[in-house]
Length: 494
Ligand SMILES: *Cc1c(COP(=O)(O)O)cnc(C)c1O
Image (cartoon, rainbow, N blue to C red; front, side):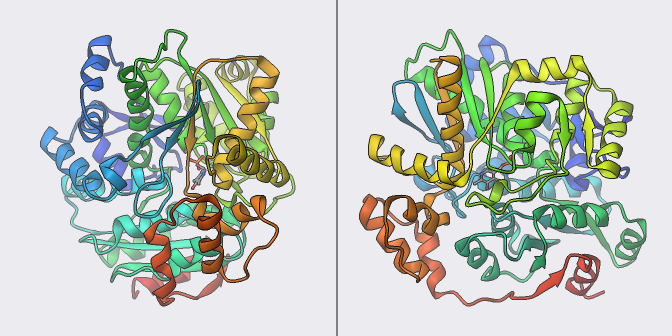
């Protein structure tokens, strides 16, 4: 299978090239030229497997220049031993037709672990095939969860350096502590004065800057990305949607009407992976795209107009505080049937004017498969409270956005189809917000707040989060959003 760039479909590369490089030189994103289809026979086989074997089977269809042994090695190294009960993606039913797909039982307590435990192995394997012998420099822009998950995944991985930029005032206290206390010889972490979009634009600017790339090459380095612009991030996310389908079949659920998927969305990576699962043959009916008050995607799905010229809100679901959703570019490529000239035009318009509008055909196709909705902080907190009272289930702030939008969807459509909700983070990553929904009195100290949330809800604080209390901060530098290049060179000692 070959991979094409969303901005140049004549460019064809292998999967290992796409993963090792992360992004195409002209700024486009790599995507598989065709989508592998799973037959009934495939699904039967998959249903009889455990998660890691499902992962190897599905990845084998995409990473065709990796050997089966290589994929198997990467998958087993990533998933064996790093997830609670060795279950990376368990389903928990909260009602007859609603299932939470819990994706936060990994080392950093967010769904990003499912891809970022695996990506370092895929990348090192891919880099060897590319055999240019250079040290890979991973640049990460994070709205909070990707940064820690990438740091954990790449910590002391041979022949890599990792540099993370996060919005200094745009992440939760726990998220910040997770990143600034990170161990490892090859890790570098910077706060920036700005929001996530500033961090993401800065990193993208470096990726397409020939001058800095040349300086790096002269010093034996090459850039890559651990953000979801890298195909190696997206492919592992397809697995858990297909795996959830198999788990429901194994439970004897009647899925003859298919099932819906709800995803709390920021960069459009996770929900795009669900769409790939659908294109591969999982009977997904509606993809429900949930946003917080930064509802640029809700408007886009409803009107066909993408307009980032709007106020940016800092919310209690910070990992979704995004106005430029980078994976939407891949969706545009799919919707336009692979018209890379059109995608290039739309992306230039976004860059120059902050807005674009898709044609009628694309708009109709998009809104027939996707439903877009949003909710604000107040509704998010109310959803956490009500869900806890009604089902005894504790949501984090992002998953609460998903559930709130889903409830509105059901009210609007009456659709009772079985629904899988992507539960993307542990509530303990956002303790104070979550606690404020069910208690009047919030301890000032973060770790007292953790204890209190645990007592009230009778749930356990993940031990990785408790352990942060005794760690020392290694990285406290905050830089201007115009100084990312300098920080990169300093980190690498150039
Ligand atoms: C990253 C993240 C999201 C958004 O996922 P995208 O793939 O960027 O759409 C939602 N919830 C949590 C907890 C996250 O960390």
